Length: 100
Picture 1 (cartoon, one colour):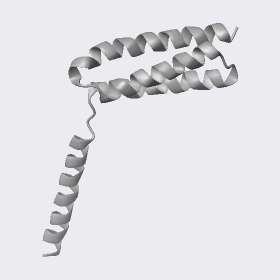
Picture 2 (picture 1 turned 180 degrees about the vertical axis):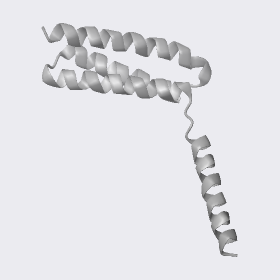
Picture 3 (picture 1 turned 90 degrees about the horizontal axis):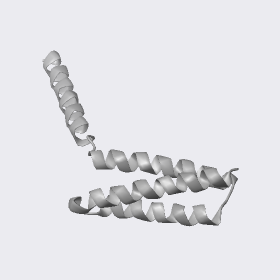
Picture 4 (picture 1 turned 45 degrees about the horizontal axis):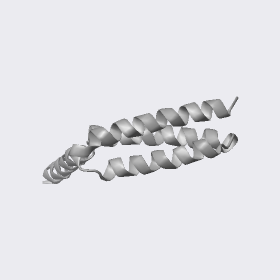
């Protein structure tokens, strides 16, 4: 009887772990958005050490585009993804040229 109780508890724990693992799978869009968020935060830190008006306005634009991407319907995500990539590239160039 004691072993049956332990087996039931173990079965419940294992099934809970499997369900939790299935819930945690993220879509490629969320992974991409998380990576871009990390890039943006890196640029924000660089701007903190050498501020630039142009780069700051581009940073605001990038954050707005990423926010729109996260809430956009699936058919608009490709277009917004391209816009975010272009804005991040501009931000990197502006940050690099400002640091010289």
